[in-house]
Each structure stands twice: as structure tokens, then as C-alpha cells.
Length: 400
Ligand code: GLC
Image (cartoon, rainbow, N blue to C red; front, side, top):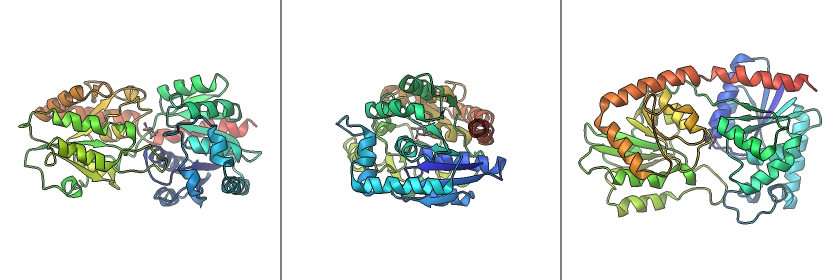
């Protein structure tokens, strides 16, 4: 079996973390398989994949194309045309991708995001089958939905990270595309209750929190839908005498123009509300498990339905109390009151009361943390990934 994976992002966000876990799981289960990763941007993903024994090929997208995305797009021009054929450099790049894939000669091309779903199809070698790994909703993105719908018949299968993502893709692509739900998983040894803890106060440039303060953190990229403002708003609603120290943990990773919040605006919001001593921004942290272990409460606050919500599974695996907006796939991975607390998206008041409840009740935090770890061990052990994905590849490779 020879597989070529394609990633537009070279940074490690949720979709790339999930890809690394899949690669690690397959490497352990199928040591004889040859795995290649073609990565379209610089960043830590390439080295992380190489460390797993994956052959990495760097094929940077021309900068102007890397910024093109549908996230902030006003026009409804076909993304395919804009992405690949808009410029002579785009065409040259596509020809190079075609050549590279022919050289690798994979049986499966596995694409890990919208841009590469499109690019992978345009450059698919004749003998290869295409598998789309869907980490996001297409239905809410008109340009993308339009393009995927037109291309769907040429993909052989899709993997969706939750039922919600599968249903969305089904609506966009119609009944002919086989869609398999494979929930993401985590490295349960890395995301474990015991281990090093990051000094979040120092990272945020704040004095240490007062002894006994409960630390609460939103762990997220700077994506616009991750709920940074709702989180800050929720913290501002907490009683002033409740000993809570809050952190926004994470940094920007997306090249696409217009898809991220500006940390300076978040700092301004914190300052306006007079909370500079209560809320800080740590910026990007290389080891999220260390950051989670430094927290008592891990918050997920996405304002839109979350395709999966890897941080929820990671927070649970670290044995921390998790608060999550349980819409979309996130709603499929938590059981409110049993292994996490669920709040409605965009509801600062509900988030504030969940945080206040946890801040006041160490017993509840401990119970949710232990139940979360048990859920993670049962449902999110990454050895499951190879067991679920390898048969999909085999069926496609055998069925030509
Ligand atoms: C994307 C989704 C997120 C998911 C991750 C891994 O980043 O937005 O919900 O957890 O991919 O599948």
C-alpha cells in the first residue's frame, strides 16, 4: 500500500493534529505501508510527519494562492478557477503537483482540507483513488459547497470526523459519494492527567495567579468562530471576588485572509473591561497538553457548530473539567453533566455560570475530569484510527 497525503497547511491546527494521529496510528498498525505527505506551506507539520517515518515532499503554493480562501470571500467565483488557474504560477504549480504525484505513484491520495480536496483531484494520477478527509462543514460555505458538489463524483470516498460533518457532506455531495464517519482520536499518553505543566502566567506576561485561584482557559486557534469574545465576556460576568484566572491559549495559524481574530483587538476588549489582571493571552503554545494540565477548566466556546472539537477530547484525556458548546460534532462527543458541561454557542451568560459553578466546586471538577478521561480512553484512543481507516483504503485499492 502506498498513500500520498496532501495538506495545504504546514502549521499544526486541529485538522493537521488529527492527520498526524492518523499517520502515527497507521505507522504502528501497518509498518510495511509507504506513506508520503505533500505539504503546501512551511511549518512544523513537515518535521512532525517525517519523525513518524513519513516521506515528506514540500511543494509551496505561490503566496498569492495561499491567501485565497472562501472564508472571507465576497465573490462567488469558482474557487477551483481562482485557486489553480487564476495565475500562470498557479498552473505551473499544479503541473508540478501532477508530476510529483505521478512519481510517488500512490494507490490512495488522501486530502486533508478543502484546498487540497480540489488540488488533489486536479492532479490525481490515473491509477490512484481519492479520499477526502472532511474536517469542516462545507454547507455553510457557499463557494466551497458549490465546488465540492461539482467534483464529488470523482472522489472515491470521504471520511468525516463526526456524524454532523457526514450529514453536511451528504447534503452537499449527494448520495453517490461513500462517506465513512471516523471520529478523531488523541495520543492518550501525551494527553494524560500527569505530566509537565506550562507556566501560563509567564507566557501571558502576568504575575503568578494568587494561591487557590482556579485557572480557566479557552484553548483554540485564532479562528473567528472559536468564541474568544464570548469567553472574555463570560469572564467579565463572574463575581469580582471569585478567584479565577483566565487565559486565551493559542495563536494564529491560518494563511487565508480574513479568517482570524486579531489578538490586539482581544487585548483591547480585556483592557476596556478592566480585566488586565484577570485575563491574559499566552500566544501559540507548542505543547497543548502542558497548557491543559496547567488549567483546572478547559473551555471550548465555538460560536458555530464545531465539526469535531479536538480540544474537547484532549481536555478530557488530560482529566480536566471541560466546558464545551455542544453543537455539531462537539455535541456527539460530550455527555452534558456526566463527562463535561455543555453550554449553547454564543451564550456568555450560560458560559459564565458553568465556569462559576466549576470554580466553586472542586469536587465537580474532579468528577468531570475523571469521567472525561474514562470517555477518552473508551472512545478517543488513536489506535482505533488505523483499525477504521485501513479497511477503507484496502477496499478502494482492491476494488479497481
Ligand atoms: C478542524 C475542525 C475541528 C476539528 C479538527 C480536526 O479544525 O474545525 O472541529 O476538531 O478539524 O478534525
